Image (cartoon, rainbow over all chains, first blue to last red; front, side, top):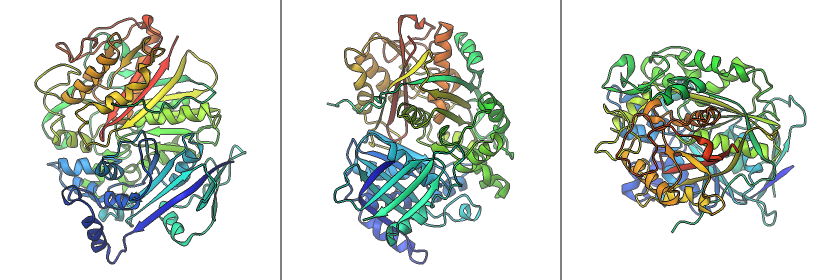
Length: 220
Length: 374
């Protein structure tokens, strides 16, 4: 059993009805010159990381299934004269890099991950096995338009961030991982990144089987 | 002043490399090393957008670009992975670590042009890997990394950490990055992929890169073999998206752990060396300042930059070169170099006992790893 203790968490989601205005409000909080070129996902990640302990020795796992969908759409639309700006913005892991570059925050260990339905479990598995003490797991998606219709982008814009360490005192929640004992464990039932964002809001305890073992999440 | 970064790889157990191979524009690892030793250049002037035209740029492709389902590279990758396909990969104690900068981005480009749903399964990272899993009979325990051109080194680093920590009995690392118009068009728009062929570490007026197809696999376990993965290290400057901190802070930070007296000698360096001027200058001069006697080579002047796959492709070549007793120099480049320890010609690895593997990426990302061969 490997436990990680939650010290802080933040989540944000743009509403389908009023997302553009909500994003504009968030953008206003940032230096205008830098914010002008930031993606919606970069802005959401900047917002959820504000106030989080982040220094050079923090280990950061960044997870996103589809990354900067609007930049991808804009870049694809720019052919046959590909846009350098949209190309740069579309490069994984641009979202988290926007947030960190804005802070001019060097970081030793950044593990940007991709993946589908098991991505949450894979990130939590790495976080639980990580030997260094301070760990952030940060996730987000940016709603696409036609790419979402084709199944290649998210339909929601959201981000969340979790700060873990190994100190059980004054913790908000406990993440536990138990490696699978059998060669063929039960089917993967990992929550999606978006479902997990909702869980952070409702503070519901969770337990599920991932590809490498069993996870539980218990709020204090 | 930059203080030493944390070094991973200090867990009690050790991690050794067993099966491994790579694919490049020149063939598998063995054939590629032969041809690099002969000074062959795989890069060829190719329209940046393939069948859709564009300016000629240096690309080292295994097959020409095409809009196809499955993608042009699918059969090539499946065939390449056959030697390691027979194990229960993707089960809990046999994790798979997958790395790519772009995964199926050429399918996304085709999706953008044709808006055909047949391209969707290959157009996302997880879609590609799920198709691979189905085809190769893997279980679902695969972890995907995508950190531009340090991706493969991160996957190798995490896989080694799992072996050292006893979290897996064997781990498979695979990487693949096949170039498509999405990527070549993008680099061309940034002007660093241009009509010039790359000359890594050359003190020239114009910098340029080439791009190449690349794939690799590594099987890791704690059972001893000739090649042991040693200390590793990462650092992310977060100074600018596409430029390094001009002070060289990232290059100093990534090398700092190896400057201790007990580590300082004994390795040669497989550098990142894409052919860009600023990064090439910072890399070569920082290496020379810290390790004046360590030979430095880059093979991207021949193979092109294999992007998220470059660390594992080039490590497979480095190990093959060690077994051959002859390390390729820096094909496609000639002096004057930014630093005197750049080796244009082949040399013997026999005077050393380790390789220092270096990779860089957008965002000022840096990764390093020592591999010992004794």
